[in-house]
Length: 221
Image (cartoon, rainbow, N blue to C red; front, side, top):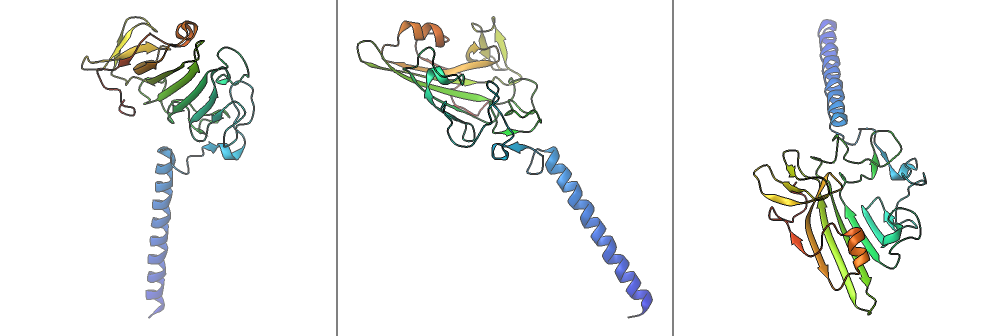
């Protein structure tokens, strides 16, 4: 092969290499834009994320309050859900589960806190959901339970009535559930046994059982 041909071959190889590098760079930028592996999010394992109450470093596994943020779980007593030991209903067991939109196990916005509804201005339209399962014992020794599913309504949903008492509806007018906390709807509530009235007044958005006419399934909103 002549020197001129070798130069052409080397030039061709260089061009292919440059094109491959550019393609790789564009792919990496696309991954970052979509929040993929290279998005620069900090994880709990990095040891730099703290809670919003005590500024304590969050670790993997269950902590002293009952939170396992990595697994999106809480399993403890009701009074400790606020990350403060003691308080009302310390004799009630509480289990909570949530998805990543409700409370992520990463910090992608750089504030050293776990992200909430990341990528959305508010919870509405974020797809967030939460379940609570309370178990207690009445004065007569009988067991009672309370289970609730709470979801963030989609962007095209609307509420009739004020926060906390109004009703959320889907875009086509089907009832989703009663408002709670201004940005969420209760889509299912199941009560068994004789719940103490003070707990009903403190925690339940409304008495009795309920199932959303729009459907009680999680992950659809």
